[in-house]
Image (tube, rainbow, N blue to C red; front, side):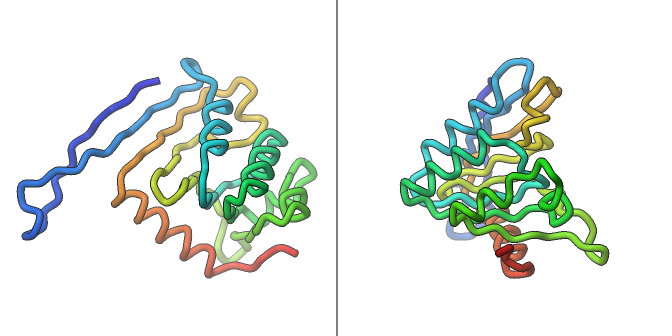
Length: 170
């Protein structure tokens, strides 16, 4: 696991010369247990979690989300409509536990292929890692955990756009 501190210069008349620091953590499955890292991040949540995931097949992820909801964390999930209907999907289990789930992707729109999470409005987790049971069983995977207010804001706007666009599964 590596931590990179990346200075970002904001070009604004009111902030000329000031800097903000983005903290970026890179994770590679050969070096770290990505599943445990993700589950630990969920365990640390205090207020909100917005997830945009291609598929949800991991019982470990579902259990962590249920525990977070029981602690009072507001959770919203957007997932691919086709993947939500496969036999291995855990979407219905989330819904039965009262977690809000919406689906994206139909013939006219294509696949909802995002893989990102916004944690407490302060941190983004993104990358090609699938957050699925299959990904956690031996795949070569990578993930970024980023703390940067501008990046979080950008991802939040995308999530909110997706959330407004699609329907809730009941």
